[in-house]
Image (cartoon, rainbow over the protein chains, first blue to last red):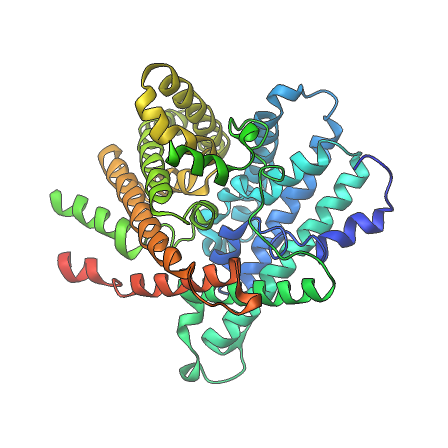
Amino acid sequence: MADKKPLSKEFTKGLIAENPVLRLVLGTCPTLAVSTSVSGALGMGLAASIVLICSNIVISALRKIIPGKVRIPAYIVIIASFVTIVQMVVKAYAPAIDESLGVYLPLIVVNCIILGRAEAFAGKNGVIASAVDGLGMGVGFTGALLAMALIREFIGTGAISGTQIFPAEYAMIIFILPPGGFFVFGMLMAVANKLAESKGKPKAELHGCESCPMAASCSLINTGSCEESVKEATVR
Amino acid sequence: MTKVFLSILITAILTENFLLSKFLGVCPFLGVSKKLSTASGMSLAVIFVMLLATAVTYPINTLLVKNDMAYLQTIVFILVIAALVQLVEIVLKKYIPSLYSALGIYLPLITTNCAVLGVVILNVDNGYNFAQSMVNSLGAGLGFMLAMVIFAGVRERLESCDIPKFMQGLPITLVAASLTSISFLGFTGIVDGIFG
């Protein structure tokens, strides 16, 4: 990771090859929750990207000062500060978006993408590379959200970003209800797996312990993966 | 009075189920729902932490609001919850090993679980008093458990199914979650129907 890669690569990997939502399976909660409309998805994607880029920059700038043992709490404080700033800005200048995002705006704090990138990338790389990595991941996240939202809003209400394409009475409203979220996400994941396989890449799976942002503070790290240790515990 | 509590409880468990209609805590939902025993253990730990987090953050929030520092909510809540979970883990390990062996394994997974932070923030947003907050957290936890246990049952059946290649793994799990979620849609309006 530490060796120099061209910056353009740091950016593009977040878009497709390591898309946080469809390939790394991070940040599922906001993806499912706010993808009912294109505007909500854009707002969420933007807010999360800003937090991601800013926290990546600060964490990478402070990476030599923060002691290894307390880095997770330190990261959480930095991320939470930026989330609070974004929250205030959105409340002041875009109250409609604040309304539509609701509780999911403060919940960006626990979005695994952000803590995950801090732990996996920003804590080990330079400021500029981290900023570019954050930008790439942010755009990848926003892109996946938009894809979900376009499908759900179009089929669920017959509109795209508020512009009516076909009459709403023919729309399948279930697509903007929670089950539609799970369904569309599953289908997109299947498509992503198919594309990945045609390029000889493994399919997306829920990750093991190495990529988990909690790995550092987690007492289960020595036992392999959470799944395994949970299995052991139940056998015991 | 009991009517208010009951309607909060039923809303949190059935109509606004945390997992299946609010999408909070989806990661553990997909991760540890492969077996009934792990699903119920995880849910018990979530109920426990949710109640504890609510009990601790409620007075803290009152203090913050009183001092005009409500904007610090997000930072303070997440730190308090993270510290609390670690503390509980240590205390359980030392003094109540039997409970630790049942729940302890799941505690590290819960620290940055959006369901716990979510319930705390929702309590504040809805303006619940202390008792209402506790009831809401209990309902959210029980709803989490209900969804986890039902879904674990569904997934155990999936194991023996012949699934198309590209749907194997996560995609089919998500589709199954979608169908489980539809069953919870049936409860829409039940609270208004009973209490309205």
